[in-house]
Length: 129
Image (cartoon, rainbow, N blue to C red; front, side, top):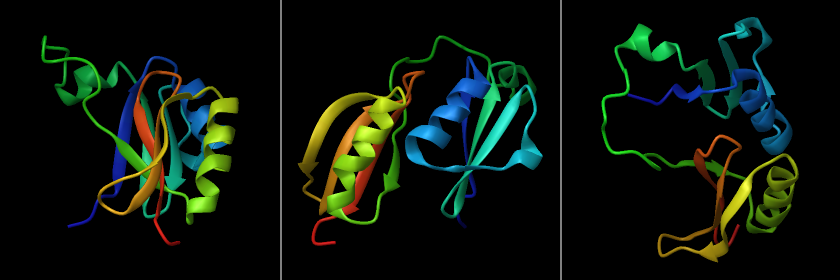
């Protein structure tokens, strides 16, 4: 089994997709472009941005379940020297820095950010890379 897609339900599909293109340098899959959906390449996984209307289509209506941050996506930037420039680019495109770069107990130099719609993500590289 392998992860192939991560989909974010978005209030503004075009703006959120554009953040990941401008802020993280990911490439859009233009053949998938629709007013309800956009998609970018992220290494071996595609990231989709779907209009909130997709909840009904997938039977994932809001149900009063716990809210707030429920997932965390991590992007490997290649080496530790690239973490800060990646943060700077993301923040310039609209991200919010939640936790500045730190060395984790599991061998990663990383920072935690949120995209313009509040989805959490990390920019990370293996210590020693």
